[in-house]
Image 1 (tube, rainbow, N blue to C red):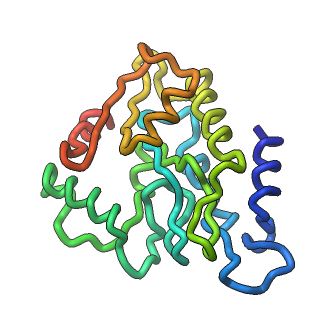
Image 2 (cartoon, one colour):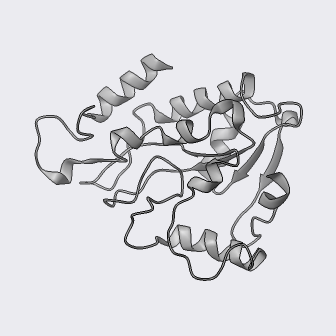
Length: 202
């Protein structure tokens, strides 16, 4: 896994010290999320604590938003992106007391502390093009992570893991992993159906 990580980082031209393309000072060449936040998903939700997995597609290429968690925004972000608004609106609809209508930030760090792994399938994106680093190895890396959770992780493997799948890419990623279909409590949810199952899971 370490070798795969190093291979991907080399292909994405990350500079370990600056989180941007080496020998370039043009801010348009910056890569998001910042390198020191790239693996927040694993630091905040260790694989042996995972109860729920939410797979995102890719991070935002807007400065100040991505911080290594799928769908989540840095708490210092100046505005709330549309996807985060959609998530919050559904939560507010289902649980108005716990999720008031006025959203003050887009951070989902509190979710990670409840055992929810927020993992992007493709984990880096350059600011300049707005096109994620698809095809450089992140898809394979995500497969390794999912397989590790299947084999060694999860807070209680006897109860299984719950996947909240929003989108075809996430579903394909699960289907390509080694996780047996009978092992999962698999929920195919979208914003129209709401995400009420979260309360029961955590």
